[in-house]
Figure 1 (cartoon, rainbow, N blue to C red):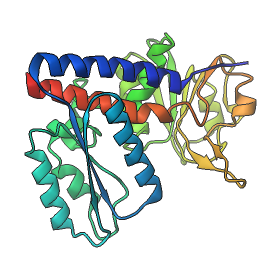
Figure 2 (figure 1 turned 180 degrees about the horizontal axis):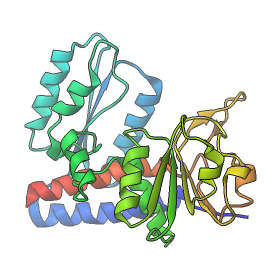
Figure 3 (figure 1 turned 90 degrees about the vertical axis):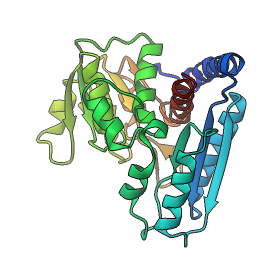
Figure 4 (figure 1 turned 180 degrees about the vertical axis):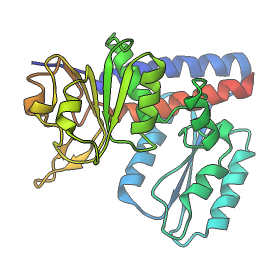
Length: 283
């Protein structure tokens, strides 16, 4: 039976470390890390995420702002707000909550956020720095995955890692992070031939495909470390991951549960990135 990778525990310990660093930064420089969240429209999941972010900021002693805009907000109006936040010295991180309404071009908005405050790690400049191995800000979920592997002292160097999913938010950045840590990385997707055979090679298997219980027991080799990024709801409305947890946990050496695995790390790494931005500003 697998050992659980407890994302809640890793998140709690990391946030305690962040709170200490925030207090130290404030004492030495007078700078309080500030995070601004921009929410356009009324998406319930986004509102929950932003509310959780606000509480997390308060718990760590950070400044937090919310900018809630109506779904009729124009792209120019949103760009104007982003520019205002870019120039606000109290703000060190800007989070534009996705998805945006259809009439607003997401790419234009994300590229308008200055790379120095792009704590989501989505700006092309920050993506490019990650590719060259000199990251400034890394997407929060991939950064959280690496944080969890390190917390449990799970070796990355020399291991074979397989990523199922090639999104810009998870699949691609986590593959680069693992590659920079000297893993041999394979990225799989819907057109990968004989996906189960490829997955069975993995010492570290990351499932980020967005399909409930997609990864089954026959796709996992004995002793693999399995990271489940998926958040799906089954027919009963229960949260489940991309991995068939009940059966895969019989073969994996370590596995993340859903919920309580990767999820808690996302906001935590957002706070971490905001703290790093504030430190750069103070310097």
